[in-house]
Length: 145
Image (cartoon, rainbow, N blue to C red):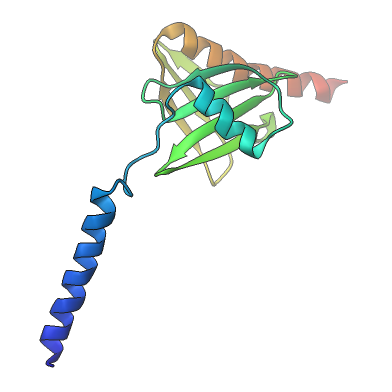
């Protein structure tokens, strides 16, 4: 068998595998069906945390969770999987900003720099901003004590 024929078979085989994975949903982005899905996913990694409120973004790819004690949890879709974390004031880079139904948060964490998130309405954006602002003010209060 010539090298060109072998190379053609390899390229065709790889193309067929990629197409099959894509057509069976393997390349679909993850989404949170509802608040309960965000809570379930967060509880898999942090089973002992008590969630007081859940605010999902308009695209259902990120959920912000207000945790007991004024802390903040995040569930975010990354490709077809979810990333979960509890955020501390130490990783925040600047104050959160909210404008209309969007909130912008930045982190010093190189694995996730934050971003701008759009919500159903301005009240949700303001509540998420307040959750992050509460982290910063709580950290300042603890440093002063």
